Image (cartoon, rainbow, N blue to C red; front, side, top):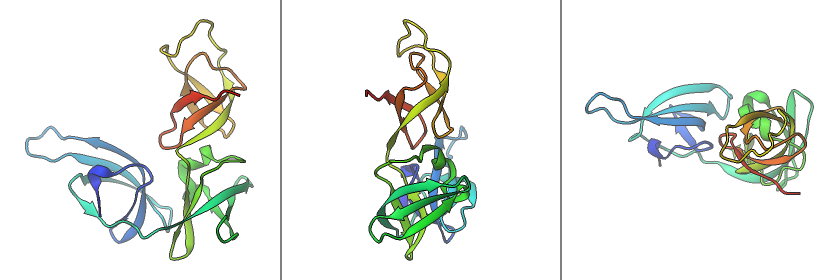
Length: 190
């Protein structure tokens, strides 16, 4: 059983009889006296890819999805579908943007630590490593004398996503990004 108070991105549970994964969650405490805290949750149906926004009391409990996980590797993307190989069975499979959601912004050649998520032997999604290293392809020029404590600036990465980075970073640098929420972790030293 998984309690709503323990929800985090990537958690898999049975919600209204369907296998779901938590895509995003924020917790809030209503101001009314006696009301319990709520997990505002964005869920993705693992079978259909449908997204749901639900407010769930943190005290509610759910069954965990009976998932099988296999190591997998990214092969290529044709722009519409992302192609992978299950490293345990050597079967190839593909997923679309509807199944991958925001994770497509973290998938690139050479990514390690991915796992295929299977329900009843069928691949329904992939899970990413906690961090990935991506190159900055577009950002404002670096500011001389900038420190890590200064304001952040937007940077477009090689996969097309935009993240907030410290002002001392410039085009061509490789940074480590957290795949759970897309925040800058650190500059990768070459």
